[in-house]
Amino acid sequence: MAQTKSNVKERQRVDVKEPSMYNVVIHNDDVTTMDFVVMVLMNIFFYSEKDATELMLQVHNLGKAIVGTYTYDIAHSKVYITTALAQKNNFPLRLTVESVTK
Image (cartoon, rainbow, N blue to C red; front, side, top):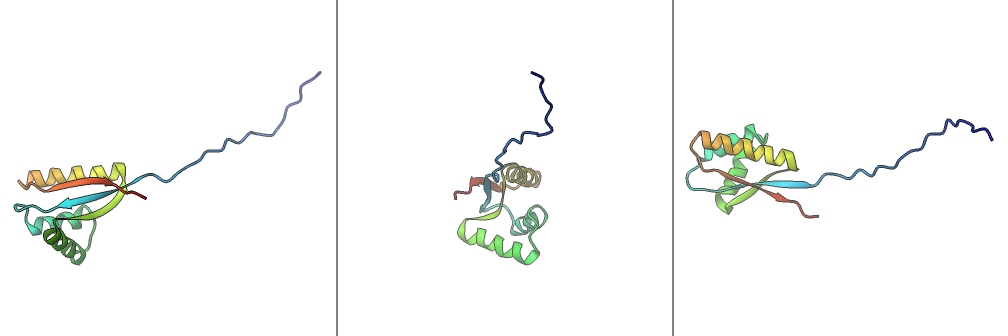
């Protein structure tokens, strides 16, 4: 028997799920200046001056605060950039990354 060619293409189903999200948490310390924290929040996390100041005061009063929620790579990149900038300016500023639980 002769085989016939078909113009029908098979489609493969690909399930795409949203990436896991992670919180970037900034921690209070007794050395890093409030001005430096506000500058970081404005330049790295893109807060307005007003919002950055309010968030800095929250960190100061409560000991820590979530400064953003990102995908894994972006969260770790922001922590790396911020930590490097803090070290360059002789501040012990500490940030951590925590998984967001659904």
